[in-house]
Image 1 (cartoon, one colour):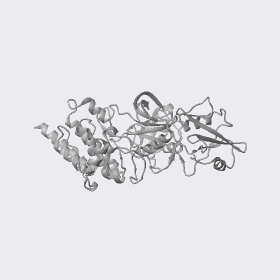
Image 2 (cartoon, rainbow, N blue to C red):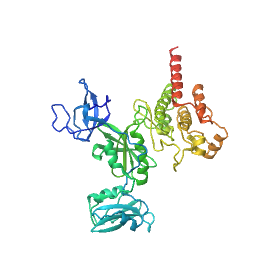
Image 3 (cartoon, helix red, strand yellow):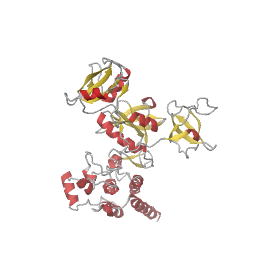
Image 4 (cartoon, rainbow, N blue to C red):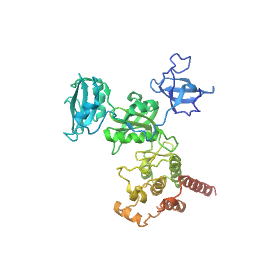
Amino acid sequence: MMACKHLAPGTQCIVKRDHTKPKANELAFHKGDLITIMAACENKGWYRAKHNTTGEEGLISAFALREREAIRVDNKLSLMPWFHGKISGREAVQQLQPSEDGLFLVRESIRYPGDYVLCVSFNQDVIHYRVIYKDRMLSIEDSFFFHNLMDMIEHYTHQQGMICTKLVKAKKRHGAKSAELELAKAGWLLSMQQVTIEERIGEGEFGAVFRGEYMGQKVAVKNIKCDVTAQAFLAETAVMTTMQHKNLVRLLGVILQDGLYIVMEFMSKGDLVNFLRTRGRSVIETRQLLEFALNIAEGMDYLESKKLVHRDLAARNILISADNIAKVSDFGMAKVDPKQQDSAVLPIKWTAPEALKHNKFSTKSDVWSYGILLWEVFSYGRAPYPKMSLKEVSEGVEKGYRMAAPEECPPAVYTLMGSCWDVDPGKRPSFKKLKEKLVKELKGLQDAKLY
């Protein structure tokens, strides 16, 4: 049996077996428990670790551990495997055969568009409960209201209320995989008891972001209550489980309660746009701007090596850590298959011409966006294409218009921007080449100061 490879502090692992009678200083655990590595021991193959549920610390052998698994991005996880979409009452009855008390599914109401129906098998019959959507809340009975279907199902799993029986077993839609089971198996599912939610630090289009604490460290917690939006963000979560790099915001885990909670490392200095605008050129030197640019290029080079296209690279989606490290975040639009069509609203000012016109996304379209991001960085957070409408931008870019250099922008950096904005995607540099150019520029700046 092979031991885990060397594990860095902060790595989270799943234990492979029970160890309920530990020796002195050893950690007690059960198979499937999640632990966090605190430090490697002098005794090779042993680590000091912290139990993610009990909070206890102790020694653990590498042979007892396996690292958390990445969730395949094309794995069709469902937060609501019991949701069957727009099927008739008769079809629901057929799905709930053979009859079994507490077997259930949820469908869209055909008779009342916009409402749902909870269908429950009981006493050889199927009872249909209309779920009314009112004031952004769902309800079957007037005494209980829910933000989403997930909360409703969770409630009636534990309490019968006014329905015929507690919900016991979900009738899964054909092909649906339970997100809860898959995330738990791979080691990414957390419980609300493990995370302390503190003050709200942001409000996005899709939900709120809170500061919190998990395993003794500060975290950012994104909460999405809407069923459909939460399902869409599950794809972002799947992408984040496959990514580990110092310049990508790290996923710590997921909570499936009251919608979806995504727990990430806390980036105390916020997003790059706000960081630049609130400090300006009197505080931030050119060297720091170049370092941010290099950090982002390194993160994107890693994504390129994984054949992942971000599709929404912009300064607003870059976060800054306490020690001024820039990290790429928001993988909500990221795809392994960039040819796949969807209805995402594209950020026109950052999107490459071929992506806007023909839906052709690639690493090279990310490079175009990186050029726009560079312009944002060296203009200290100004919005790109100032005073131009979206229509003027898309028409102008197609005719060959490119933004002028930001004030006091190093000529070599503006040349780099221009190379990112080549109309021919094949002529744009790779992120590896961009990294090399930025390292060279930083070295030149350092050598100039020495003289």
